[in-house]
Length: 105
Ligand code: SF4
Ligand code: SF4
Image (cartoon, rainbow, N blue to C red; front, side, top):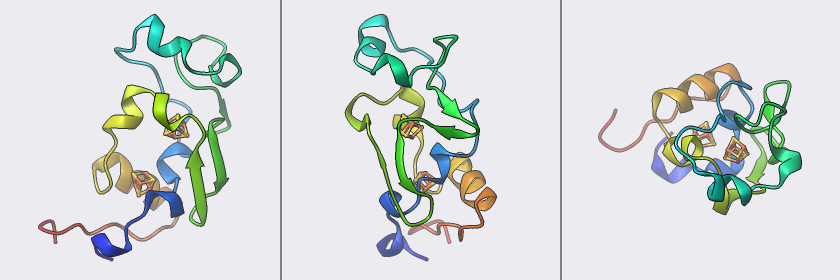
């Protein structure tokens, strides 16, 4: 695969691999208040997950997915980049092919 093949909206693996991943880090109360409360975990430390899947994720992994709170998603979600270690781990866990970005092959 190359960058032309890369599309997070046909993946979503990183949003459905670990309930420990979409946790809040440096967000302040105002940022967290923008997230619908029903999507926040009981301990208020991150996103509510069903199993390993974030409850804000819609769609089917590896086919068509979307973050339903994309504009206000947690910092860790902003930080995750296609091809980074978290991405590669998640794609591997879902049996999706690794991403090979320009300059990394
Ligand atoms: S696992 Fe990688 S390619 Fe898939 S949605 Fe996350 S960042 Fe995008
Ligand atoms: S908040 Fe959005 S980007 Fe972050 S894990 Fe959940 S679905 Fe993925």
